[in-house]
Length: 282
Length: 283
Image (cartoon, rainbow over all chains, first blue to last red; front, top):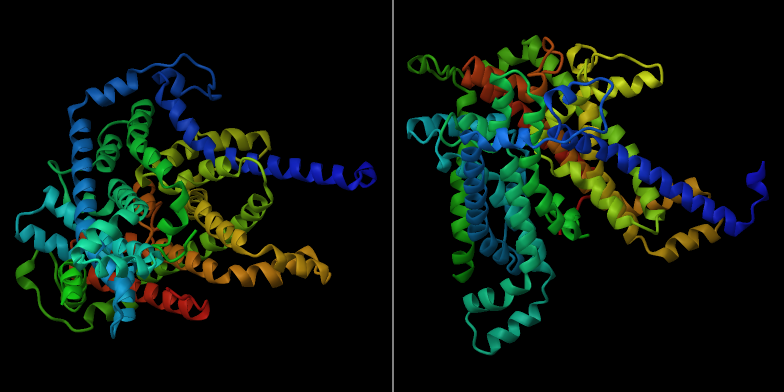
């Protein structure tokens, strides 16, 4: 009953404390699994299996040394980096000019074209991978970087076109018109004026594309066996062939998470846009 | 002409890597293609589709897929609205809370799967350990046919609710303050304010979020494949999982292509309904 004797200012303060507490509890609940996995990666085998769970323990780097010392893990990391960088680069080179054209010119059937590009995201990957599997097998391209890069490009290209179109639409046309009047060619205007202004958009598109490729599982699983295996597959096989070593597994997971977390920090301001392919501007 | 130079490289690649493969899959869905006997491949018209309609395992996977989509979407929407409303009221530390809360969205599926395998573990899992304090459990989670699908829904709620929180939160911030004040002056209750003022105003953004959520949920594969492979039995075998099993375990590519096309048609139909009914405008 005391609650009702509080004056307005006190009630407001209480409300704000309550608001903050509930939000903090939710945030901790969402974050706890990640923290738990990180702790696990620094535990010895005995500590990892201890029940009740040990929150305080003597940390060891043994798991990381074991993972890093395994030559395969290094190779998978390299594969993942090559594939993610190449598919992102190709997606930008092909997609950015196309997005610019789609942002600046209207033509018949443009809406249909854009929705067609969007619908590539609706194709179930399990069905889409079948023709590639058959064709790549015929061309002996299975288990090569090229195969996975092409598979990832199928998603990234459409993504880049949608994202960059939304950024280009935000640039006032007058800037380009002024450049054209001053004697710049269309290509010069594009490379010297438009692209530098769109740097944040390019960065966001690149980061989202990179993270997609880095995380992708199904295409990489179907297309690779030994040589071109990516990091997620490497982590997956860690479990498939050996008994579960939770310490090493979580250490491998933490390493796989690092680039994602670093890049995530860079795109904080553009998250809504990135997650909706540019359809919602945050 | 210049426009063509900008556009055509991307269009040529799109046709080659996106459009042709889709037609290839459609063509394969009308064939009996079995990878172990490629020589015996022949055109069978709607044969695969007719078999699928009589296949009880298909109906099971369709039901599981729809249950999964509906279950995840409903709970995620309710939770996301609650969290976004709290976040919109918050004045201090919004950036920090947002940053931590949204992190799970970007985690590698393989990491997410193992994280939850660790949490679900009957012997050393944190979940059973904590629930025991409340006199609940122990549960079998992904290891029981009854609890496996709800367990997988919990994982998606954990990973993807933040996505909807972000979208709703962005929408709430964009509502002009004077609209809220005008409604309050007119004597709207908090519930009316939410349901009759805020929700309609954020509907365009919300529908985009729901669209992407429904597309991604319908295609779900990674986490389920890694954790249960559709099991125990076929209790978590969604349509994507069944398609994969048919195509890459039984090598029945024709049948798998037809299954995939049915899933594609379902996703297109649901997307069409959301875009139409939600008046989504992609401009």
